Length: 423
Image (cartoon, rainbow, N blue to C red; front, side, top):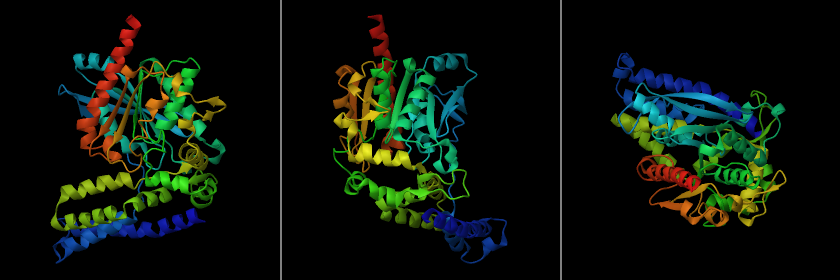
């Protein structure tokens, strides 16, 4: 009943939120006589805060329509659906230019698949990642579908299915010229997918960049890791798994609801979020519109969450965070043993944030101990000083510190592969 209770609460708060939004607009519109009333700005700030606390946050758009390349040329971006499965869409950001030299340069640039997390937030959380990569790469991204929107007739979705989806997308794009970047949770299934492809003798991507992921959660365990190990799997099934109500296409499907995940995100740093909302209120009072807009943009993304298929979530808890099957060499996907040592052609870059409170220091670096078939010269590890979890793929540190290293590693991987073919 918890999911249904949440829906009733949402239905109750919806009209209140809309009323608060309308009231805030009336009290701030320069053409409205209400805006001239004493205390109008304070009342408007209060109404907008109520609106934002009670509104329903829909999936944001990527809104990447153009970029300016390093040569100063404007590049138009068209987002298009390249391949679709019931649980995920493969999106491509196609670049266009009128300049012949720019077109020729773009044709020769590396192809990158960004594997976004299926862990609460939408793929749009990686908007900054994609925007930077588009400067020097052809970019694809996995856009996972909200499980409450997937009819139960589509069947279950397990962690093994996630791995198979990544394999399918790699083959569709073409592994021979592809570079894969995985952020957070997908580092594990991406490593599994490439390992299985290598063991079968299939072509594998030129490089894989793994950022802030739980390859071996036994290293520097965080509060997230501790929660997964302190409770049995039955606790997670009994406490966080719920059934989608009838007002969604996926009614009857078992999921880990987005609203519960969001509550968990907030509970990790409640004081920080409370302070942020209070600062937003004060910024509105002071007329600091830039900071207020920055708050809106952040929480429009942060508060937009999706439901995860229950099977996938429980598999991840058991396989990754409780049994540690990947680092122990015991993980089997659809009957095939995952052996990262089978990877030989693909270069490896791991990136960690010094202050990451979700994937602790050393958890991603553990991939190097598993990928013993990759020559040392084609492996690298970076720790980003002062960066938390989000700082390694979004914001100033990503753009100024991390991205240049990722870009250069991809280029070196291309050059190394070309040199080896010539030899």
